[in-house]
Every structure is written in C-alpha cells, then in structure tokens.
Length: 292
Image (cartoon, rainbow, N blue to C red; front, side):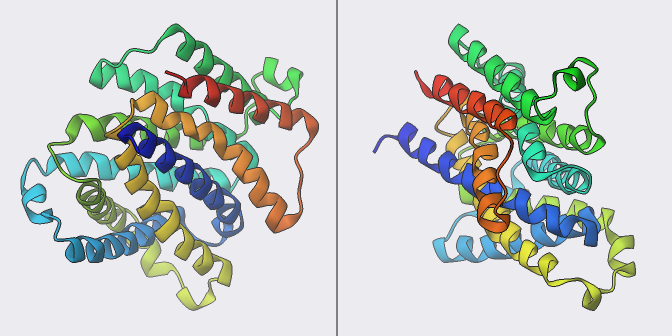
C-alpha cells in the first residue's frame, strides 16, 4: 500500500474517533473545568505513549534535546484546541460543534500556504468553499434568516478559535519535523501540552472534589485519553508526513456524519432534514478534495 493510501486510512480512523469525543464531551463538559480535563487527558496520553515509545525503542530523548521549543509550540496549540473544544461543548450541541470543526480544512489550507507554501488547485478551492458552506448551513441549523443576521452561538465562536489552533498544528507538524517518527513527535507534543495545562489548571485541581464527579466524566476521560487524544494525534502526525495539510484536514468533513451516527447510537437522535443537507455538502467536499 502506498504512503498516501496509508495516510488516507489514518485520517478515516481519525474522523470516526474524533466524532465520539463530541457526543461524550457534551455529557461531561458541564461537570468539570475543561482545562483540568484536558490536563488529565494530556498527562495520561503521555504516559500511554511513553510506554509505546519504550517498547519500540524510539529515540525520544535525542528528539527532545533538539530544538525543544518546537514541542512547546505544538503542545500549546493542541492544549488550546482541546480546552476550547470543551468550553464550546458547554454551550453548543454536538452536531453544530462538529460542523465548526469542518471549517478546519479551509484554515489548514491557509496555514499550509503560510508555513509550507503549499498551493491549492482550483478544484480544491471549490471543494473547500463547498465544505465551508455546508458547515455554515449546519452551524446555523438551516435557518437562512439566522445566517443572514450571522446569529452564531457563543459556543461555536469559542470552538472556532480552537479549530484555528488545530489547523495551524497540522501545518507546523510537517514544518517542524526533523526526521522524528510520528510516535516520538506525538509523545513530546503530549508532554509539552500536559506541562502547560497543568500550570494553567492548577487552581481548578485544588478546588475540584474528585469523588463528587459523575461517572460520565471518567468514561469520557478514558475515551478522549486513548482514542481521541493519543491515537488521533498520532494519526494526524502520521498522515501529515504523507499528505498535504489541506487533504489531511479534509477528513474533518466526515466528523458531523460520524457524530450523527454516534448520537443515533447513544440517544436515538436524528438531525433535521435541513441539517442533513449541510452534512451532505461536506461529504461532497471531501470527495472533491481527495481526488488528485
């Protein structure tokens, strides 16, 4: 299988795993400080990845000593993304929040040009515009009048800035890479993010009564630690070394579709036909972006 094909498979798995964090995050977000939850997920993910690195013999120490500022930048970007995601989920439904995530490819294309001088073809620009239109349709719930008045929820705005951090991260991973494997790069990013978030969330850690937290918080923490943090960051880094930044982020267009399936499985909820139309547009944009 070609390196590009492996990159596509990695991002298909990425989109499915990311979607689960939206459906679970909506349930857990009201019960815990997002920065604290993100600090835990980064620290536990770092432990999990450190075990894998030790087993595989990855040269982590050598990579950590070589331009360590790279890991602080990448860790800060992902720390901001995950924290803002849960802040947004406190105020916005899972499907609408996932739709904001589908704006990431447009921003990734911009950062890909800014940092790597990656250029998009005319068809890719049309696809990005189509996907962005589909995302906006879902965000505004198919309400034309709300779209014209640009009545966007506060939760969606908060998460948008997190998505900007994620898009910058996808481009900088490739720019900063100096031959490190995806496992090594992801582990060092997790360690840096954990340090940043631990300092940020220290007051919340002291004031939070752990025994009073409901079970959904611990279930969500377990899922986002292994599936939606360590695994997905590794998948993004793996794919970013094999695909252009815009194509890597193109798979975010699948996230609202996966969220709909998660919501159907967990709660038996179907979106309205108008919202479904916007999701369909994002799927068309994905198909257009994946063609060479």
